[in-house]
Length: 138
Length: 182
Image (tube, rainbow over all chains, first blue to last red; front, side, top):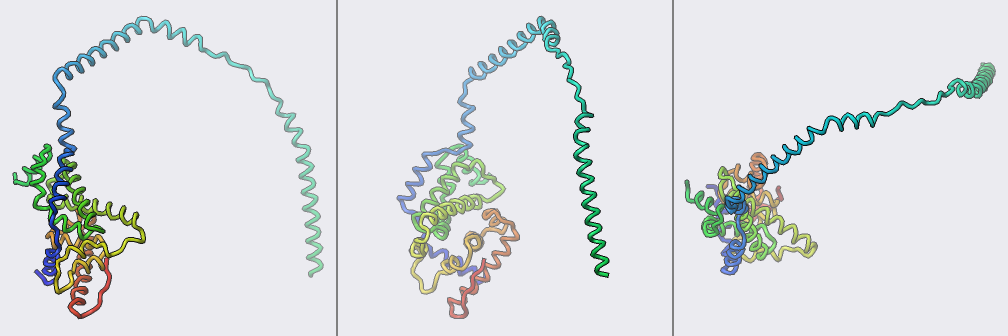
């Protein structure tokens, strides 16, 4: 072993780590107050008596029989009710009022055409101004 | 089946006596390690108590593929970390080195204790890695498991820790200055 490892081991040994009787009893008391998680989990099934499992099984069987009986009763009356329900809930088609879309289009076309003419006139004026400027430059 | 595994099985079944017997050989070395990690002697005692309580409570989760000491140190480091962070949060700026439990627990000696220097120049994790390697003789794989790091990280930081402590060791012998690593 090298010098550093020896030194580290020796120096660690000089650290006093004696556990006092007070700390020891404190730890022991804490340990006695708890139990491992697994021990608790394992013990729970063992505590249940046989009658618990018998009662659980009987309850399960009774519930299954009850469900089967209810389903059989529903089957004997069911089809007539279903057809009536379907007939009652049929919705009649509603006639929607016809909208004259052409009128709306004609109303919008007038202002837009005017706007287009104005824009084209502005464009023409701007073009003439630019041409004039170009002639002045050259 | 080894004696240790028998004791572990008995402890899993709820035997406090078996658990006490199981940890008897580890208690002192654990406490020594915790004295280096905690901010006071009382904290180290609390950390030891918490470690043993948690180990007993959750012994069912112990995986025998690892050494029992590896598992125990992993719990100890977590407990010490929790205690330390809560104490530092409470003390804030009042925390100082005068409460260092190592200062009171180291036997008088002509030379400086290298672990005190290690505490000063190494980070907590590198310090722990060095302790586990050179005091507990743990393998790199076990140290990596305790610190929840990779083996590569552990190897690199053990090397850095060694270099830093060699510098410290030479400095105490009157050769060169110290340098912080980790």
